[in-house]
Image: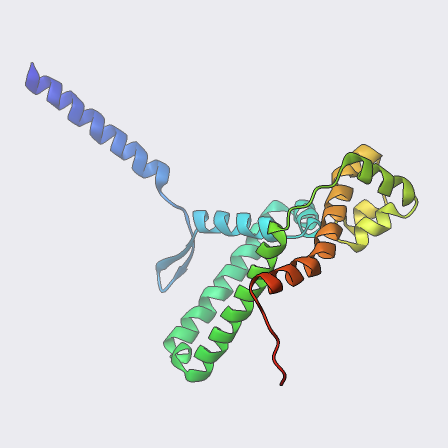
Length: 202
């Protein structure tokens, strides 16, 4: 009886394993020298990254694009990127002093930009419904042009009609951004004093 029970468990394990292998098998979309280069899951990750990093206007353009065309464009770009990486690696270009210096400079620039972005995010501001309503009433005629110039709506959206409730959160985002930029310099001055920064004569 025990042997039969163990055999049943073993058969169930084999069945589940077979199902899992088929379920998680990743479709290969591109190969290099016969070996997998880009899989469906990598393409899905790239698609998600591109959409999340795109501006509102960019996301609208993606939505209007044929889904297959969008994926093919992404795949083509990913393949080109891998070709360049392989070329740089094979030629040993990444080991050159000039390459290493340029890479170090770019990393510093990216880190500074990222630091600034998170610094601005840390400057907490609030915009009340009353402020949003007041700004809307004051700029009702030009509100869509204002939102468009600040990249909160795209060209297509600018030519349509919207109620206040539809634009409310976009206006709030605009006012929050404006408030952050206004307190940015004040915060820099405050932190200079806090960190005892002193500019010496050159």
